[in-house]
Each structure stands twice: as C-alpha cells, then as structure tokens.
Amino acid sequence: MFGRRGNEEPRVTGAKPPVPPAPPARQPAGDTAVLTAPRPAARPAPEPVRAPEPPKPVAARERSEAYYDTKSQVFSALIDTIDLSQLAKLEPENAREEIRDIVNDIIAIKNFAMSIAEQEELLDDICNDVLGYGPLEPLLARDDIADIMVNGAKQIYIEVNGKVEQTGIRFRDNQQLLNVCQRIVSQVGRRVDESSPICDARLPDGSRVNVIAPPLAIDGAALTIRKFKKDKLTLDQLVRFGAISPEGAEILKIIGRVRCNVIISGGTGSGKTTLLNCLTNYVDRDERVITCEDSAELQLQQPHVVRLETRPPNLEGEGQVTMRDLVKNCLRMRPERIIVGEVRGPEVFDLLQAMNTGHDGSMGTIHSNSPRECLNRMESMIAMGGFSLPQKTVREIIVGSVDVIIQAARLRDGSRRITHITEVIGMEGDVIITQDVVLYNITGEDQNGRLVGRHVSTGIGRPQFWERARYFNEEQRLANSLESMEVQRD
Image (cartoon, rainbow, N blue to C red; front, side, top):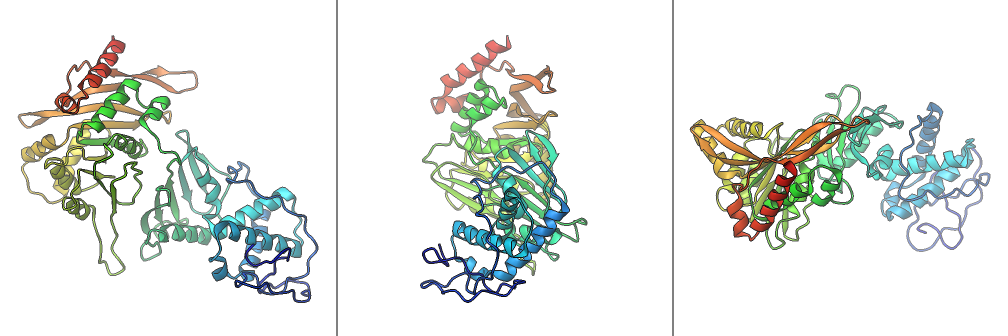
C-alpha cells in the first residue's frame, strides 16, 4: 500500500496526540508517503471488519447527537493529521484504506468507547466525507431512489416508488452541506456561492442536480438530485412496469424508427427524459444525432452522438451560451436528428424550424399537462422570444413541424404512465386539429390503493404517419399493433 513497505505500520503526519510519541519509525523508500511523522503510541485497537461494497443502504434509525459529536472530533483530528495534497494523488481505494487506518488510530488514541459496528459506521461516514459526497453516498448507491431532496443540514428526503419519505441521516452542519454542493458543481465547471446562489449541474452518471444556496435558501442550502438508474431503461422494461402496453410500445418503437418529429409532454417527475432516452434507442445506428441540454443528462446509446451543453455567464455577466445558441449552431453541424433535452423558452422556435427543414426525427420535451396544453405552451414560448408573428402563422409552423405528442404523467399513487399518443393532423381555420391514437383509461384502484387502468386504441385505423411507416417498411408492424389494440378494446 502507498506509504508503507512490507508489514510496516502506518505513520501519522503532524498528529497531535495526548500521549508522548513513540521513537521515530523508519521512513519507507520510494514515493513520498502520505503519512510521514512518527506514529503516536496507542493501545492496540481490534482489527476492524472491512465495509462491504457497494455501500449499505441507509439505516432508518436516527443517529444520536453523541455520534455526531464523536464524528466531529475524529474528523478534526484526521484533517490535522493527513496531508491532503498527497492523499489526492492516491487511487480512490488506496486513499480510502489510508483514511481508515488513520481513523482507527485516532479512535484508539482518544479512547472512544465504540462497538465494532459503530466504528465501521464511523469509518464509512468519514471516508465518504473526505472522498465523496458525505451522507449522500449511501443514498446515491441505492438504485431504488428516484429523487434526493436536502432541505438544509438536518432534513434529507427521498422518493421511493413514487412516494416521498424522510431519512434518518443528516449533514454535520450547513457548512458541510455547502461544501458537498460546491464539490458537485465544480466537477462540471460551475460554482455556487453567495454571488451565484442558484446552479444547475449533474453528477458523473448524468443525474440532474439543482442547488440553491444561502442567502436565498434561508435554512441552509437546498440540494435536489434527480437520480438516474445505473441500468438504462428500455421500452420493454416500461411495459413490465405498466407504463405502456406491449402494443403501445410497438407503436412508440415505430414512431422512433420512422423519423417522426416528437414532442414529449408531461409534468415534473413524470418520466419525460426517461421516455426520450427509450425512444432514441430505436434511432438507426448510422444516424448523426446532436443533443442540446442545460445540464447533460441524456444517455443515448447510439455510436454517433454529439452532446452539447449550455453555459451560464461568468462573474462579469459575460460568456453565456444559451439553448438558442446551441440549437442554431446545430444546423451547421450536419445533424440528422436534433434532440433538445428540455424546451423552456424561445429555442422552441429554432427546434420547430429544424424539424421543418430536413431534420426529421428531431425530439424534445416540454412541461405541460396535456397534448393540447403542450401546443398552447409552444405558442406562448415563441411569443416570449419576441417573435412578432401572427397567431395563425405560428400555428402553421407548429402543424408543419410536429408529428406526434406523447403525454407522460405521474398518477396520484406515484406510478408513471404514458397517457396519450396524439398526432398533430392539420388546421381547420385557426384551430390546430389533433387526434389521439392511444389513450390510458383509469378503471379503478385495487385494495392497496394502486390505480388500475389499461391502454386502449381510439379506433384510428390509419394514423397520419402511416405513409412514413410505409416508406420505412414498417406499415405491417404498425397495422398489427393497431389491430391488436382494437381487438382488446372490443
């Protein structure tokens, strides 16, 4: 191990023990050691049991104030002891082992009365504080958590199976919470402090992060993490979860394959980004796809993908790159499909223009509660961009650009469902005409309070995108899926 030779015991750098130090030990040859001073005398501590990997799920029990007081003392002694610059040069596993060895020595020197289980818990916590995201590490390791919501140092909530519950863990204080927030956002070249208290960022796995720091957040920094599953979801998995029927999934696969222009609509947490990831799985492998996002979170599985991300202004208010800038620049990069992670403003006009000028199969997501409201929101976003176009002209642009709107929703029992697959047909006078191809009908609820429903066909025999399906030799598969849904409806 780094900093040792043979069976040599670890040595502590600059420690301030309460007992006189032992005679200096030999300095190992080779690389500069993380631990360079003589080791203080201490009573032998029992060999700790190594923590399992991955980290254990967070315990539901509340930790006592005495535990946090002990942890604070050990952490302070550790910071006084180690050379952080040397520690940063180690591999994560080696650094974790060094920290565990030193913490064991500190616990023995200070004579803390702890069981083996409590000592293991403390070791894991301190390693996470120094090398990771502190108390969030065990939460991030769990794949069943969809959201992590930190409301100051004392309250951490999680969403599991669509329901929000409070955890029994907390940060040491608000300063530790702010340090973790700064560590997260600095990894993507952003910052959060009093002069820039709001920040969007992402974790290395693409999980979405939002931080709002004091003075805007009164009770300590508010940190929200939208976690992504380690395994990328597919439409087949969504079928197993009940989000869409098998026949509906076949229709979605065809929509993705035949280069329909798609807008995915839904409320917060309804699964829009997940559905967008699933749809892109059916894009041909030889297509060039360019994504534009505020914080890069899409997990496309094609080989030819260019990922672009917006940039906030610097301290002087300069250097900002907006979503509009990215979408306009995409048109000069020879894209075959343009995918906008989330359409929030006037960039919708540039996306619609791209959809209408040879970039078929482009996609985006919009916050709205129904397909009809989605169309209205696109109109209002174009108006917010300062485009002085007649209302009818705007609607004609929308009709000429968007082929399909897919509506996702999170129901009151926490489940997520695809509730509409809706086509944009055309205009009658000044009104945009749409038709639903697939709907989700709620029929009741079971004894556990879970909503029961099914996806049904609306009886459309030949959707508007039938000709596209025929062009891509998919009309037979589309006909079979629609017929199967029609039989189930009857």
